[in-house]
View (tube, rainbow, N blue to C red):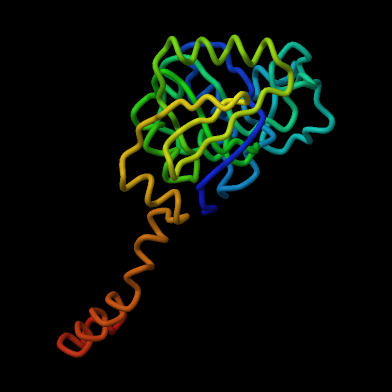
Length: 214
């Protein structure tokens, strides 16, 4: 996955509490057997006026003009500002897939659902927990200033506002290490490929019958 060190991006406000994973990516899109193609269906039931299906062409659908991500001022947003308990509901990993494939790199909220929170790190997204009052102030600033951008510096663990003010945030050292180096679970495992090959060779030498198939 892509490394996350410093990211500057436009902020989009998702001004709802308890946004669950079925709202992030509705259940019908879980029929796909690949890990790609979920971005066009992010927040599908809010984003479009017609019902979406896995094989539908986004260009032929009816966008909801009132939905935040369809508003011109938030086009190209890569930082999502949300309210508390974002990502609640089912444990589907498709939710962070859809957010990442839409173009988001960082999420900011007072709290996240536990399983969703863990899944975001494994898919190259950085979820940042800030005090509710701080998040509320960011909402006010996003609404007040079109084109509002933030810089997320994972190396220094700060969010830099347009006027230069810095907001510190916490992230577990191991998760920070993985994001900054672009390591998902598979990438971490492959770092030990030499040791894995050595173990397999030794096992085959002592137990050659394991190489036989029925």
